Amino acid sequence: MPQTITITVDGLAEPVPEDLGLPQLIERHQAQHKDLIVEINGRFVNPRDYAQVSLAEGDRVELIHPAFGG
Image (cartoon, rainbow, N blue to C red; front, side, top):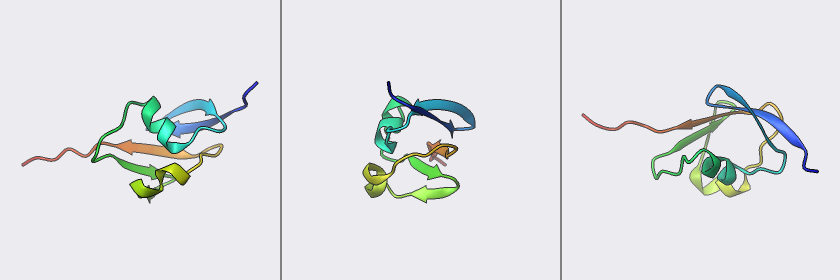
């Protein structure tokens, strides 16, 4: 049986499988967008690094969709 961890996504606690990677979390939240900004524990994550990022118990993840316009 898969183990779960609890992370905080956009301010809400969420149990996730302990082996969930950042790309799967983004997909799970339907947040795929070319301008998506991701922060984990207050640090920016470069999109080229998404595949190498693993999540840990207590991580705080922000999925930010910037609003452009003028």
